[in-house]
Length: 111
Image 1 (cartoon, rainbow, N blue to C red):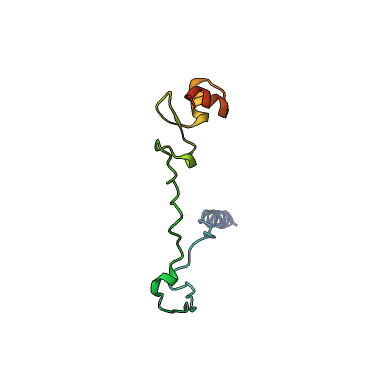
Image 2: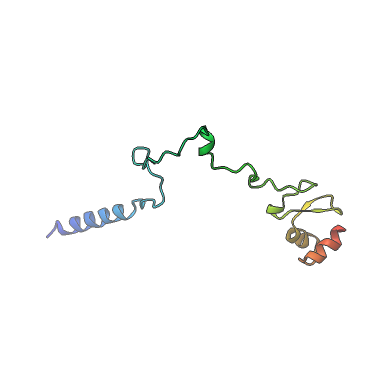
């Protein structure tokens, strides 16, 4: 009977340690030895590595959408002539106390 609390404490401690274990990651990439190899070979008719090239030369990289003033539209920046810098309309409206509308931004920045 005197050993019963020791068993309970040991059982509870082991349960806590097991519960603290990091769960397995679901979206982990396969290890090199586990990767499935593609056995399909493209038909080669003198094209060499060009047949394998899947990238498009006409696509611009993400973030390469600068306007004439260097403002990145994808990040929300627009040129403001009054401040002479790229501004985000919602940040400018908060900073200067103007309405957060296209019209108010255009009027403030002199568009």
